Length: 237
Image (cartoon, rainbow, N blue to C red; front, side):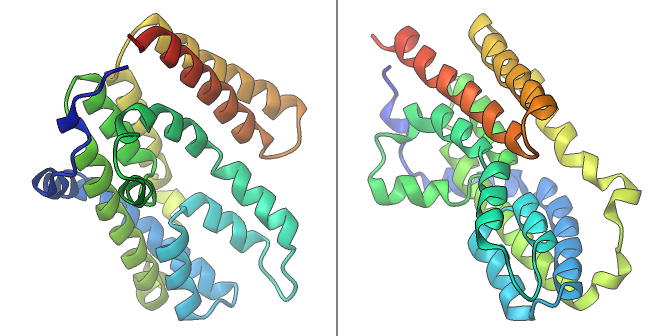
């Protein structure tokens, strides 16, 4: 598969544009960061540990899951397995981004991947599938989301009592609806239909018959492996 050099060039103007484009979504990320900061304080984490966790881990669902296992004695192995299961979707993200990032220098490639999350991945893939450069959205948008998550976590430590239950406001549906809109508006062909169907079907079967959280791993692996194999066979020339 051939990729234009401009598609993988780290254009700082595009990064800035990507940062601005993801700012509206980042406002909702701040709200969830506030909820996490409040929850972390209630579980007994100190302020520095909470902010460092959000800045270094940058994985909202996994961080909330980690809080559920937090206590005087932290079960390290179950904690690692749970966090891996929740973040296993990044296997699929990495597989889909590989054709556009493989020509970047290794340090830049993994630097970009540090801030990849659901929203900026979805928007960058939509841009790439339309023949545009998505690196600005991927990296710049990721920086916006990362900054919002870290800021929200800190605000939660200070002002979190004002929003104790974001689910009651329906804010937990915002990111899901956004990602669904990105999928619907993305590339439509037999390959994408089969990949998403295999990932969804595998995940549903695992949810019904395998241990808790394993459906995330199974769905990501099934879709990611199929996407990587099919992409190499069909698009290389």
